[in-house]
Image (cartoon, rainbow, N blue to C red):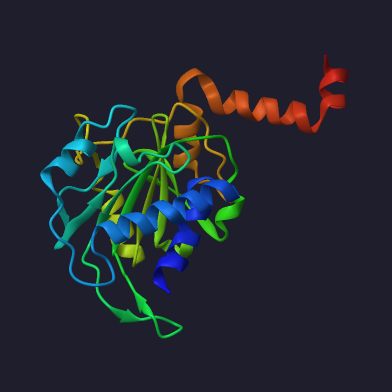
Length: 236
């Protein structure tokens, strides 16, 4: 069924640990139920609910506006439902009844954008993936292109969609819901060095090499010391 399968996919993204995957699945299910998913088309998001997202105080929360490619805003998270290990999400589309693999109902949302504080991790758990540059910042595409993780400021922004094309178009239109910003320009450079997996093209390398405080060079040196302490000791 869709809810279970999508929750598992998001669980890989948000934290790469079992506790966060569990919390993410619970938060996702709650959001879908709150929006009327699985029984009828969702009601418009209340202005008070949207205002809670627009005044979220801890970090910029990204979205693509009150509608995207004809898909309305379905649900939003806010301060009251915030789980630090999951992040803040906005959901687009209308929930419709479909037959699941086991004959039950399923709920398909064409787009979800989740913003969370980035924590040090490797992207190995994302499975098959490739790296790219979007809006001037490093990003990783996975889940056959239907999911994209962008690295900006102190954040990881995960775009989950039903098609690779929609995921990319949404990534190109990201803007903060609770802070000034524009979808026309580049995103803020990350203040951390993302642990990218696989080939990294020269354009991405150039961005990584010019991040604040030479963070990627320092990360590489620290990794080398950790992996080859005897070599470093001899050189010292």
